[in-house]
Image 1 (cartoon, one colour):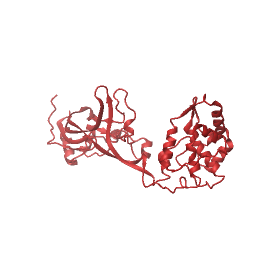
Image 2 (cartoon, one colour):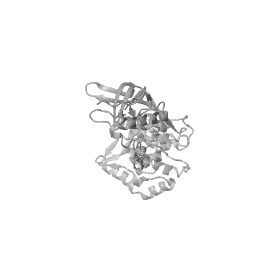
Image 3 (cartoon, helix red, strand yellow):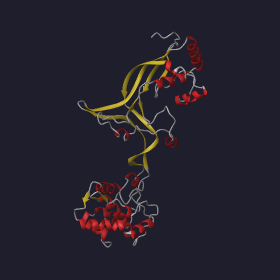
Image 4 (cartoon, one colour):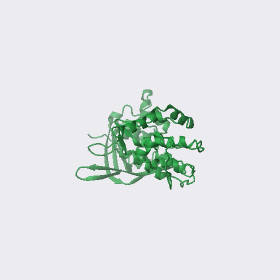
Length: 368
């Protein structure tokens, strides 16, 4: 028996992790489906050392499972293939004794096209937001704002003095805006100071933050939901002091000091912990919220010795798929009748595209 399938624009890439030929893991059920791995960020991760191609850039081809899925669809079984096979124990899987007698020949014409994919889960852009900046937000438009953010303008020696001396005067920051704040704090991540340099001052600073239970308790009283206070700060990493963490902690230290003069009860440094800053969360304070990413162009750049940079696009296939079943004439007639009765006019072959049975279904014996 021979069935010829004609197909057009069948996608030969996969955008979800896991396998569609097995039940969803519980974590994917709770998330509403398999994880989307075709975002620009995902396609830059997990690159093969030799080819430079990301493991998330998945290419597909026609397999035996694809063919069995097509046959089940043609006879009217709309379940997923693994579900049909699972019912074999109840003798409800029609092709249980025929799968080993099925073979196929795929004759595709492949093309590559730039395709724009839409992520229905709606993740967020790490660096974008909606709405305009709230220039009158209390954090940047209050009497204490200049003194609060002025901490970020201190050099390292002045920062140490500020942490150790609660009477240290901090010069005001002028023209405050959230983007300037983010860039300053992000810049601190590239600065480290070894313990061997100015050892005494460094040890005093870290010791005051890590071992001052009264300061940590005062901070926790002001921010009950804060997971880490000063005593949980990651100020040391090997023989280096994390200067960025010290500046972030200094901001909270300044909040405590300013609270003795101003009403700071409503002040929340969202996106800033005692260790670092998360820009997208911080910007939420001053904007209409994070900007959703609804999709992205699907491509992946790899670097190959010799040719250099190679851009891999979506692969689409058009062609014919010949499915052969080495079965008796009676069985072939039965399957042909089931296909005609089901009346499936068109269907997907793999992912997207259009496929249909081309011409008459031959029930002649397959000549090997």
